[in-house]
Image 1 (cartoon, one colour):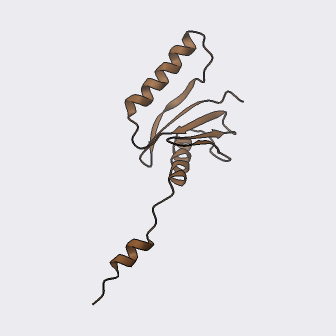
Image 2 (tube, one colour; image 1 turned 90 degrees about the vertical axis):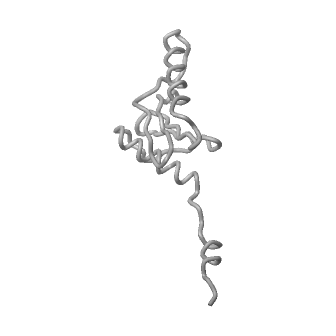
Image 3 (tube, rainbow, N blue to C red; image 1 turned 90 degrees about the horizontal axis):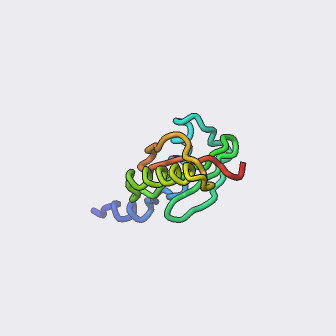
Length: 111
């Protein structure tokens, strides 16, 4: 009897990380009341950055290896820069978890 397991393993495909990131962004955006329609991918590397043109925000989907404390530190750094009158994008909303990714939002400075 021949096993069909090897052929199943060869044909199985892992989900595209960019697709998973887009779904994480969509779920986090909807959860926070942002409109994800027309989200434009701006950066695709270790993290994914999307502009949400209908909401005036930019969403960052962090790699799964990113720690929550690192995302909090980035938001606090942005707040400190703003308090010191340095121009930077202000954090908006809260940090979400969607599809195993941390997702946060900032204001869109190009709006």
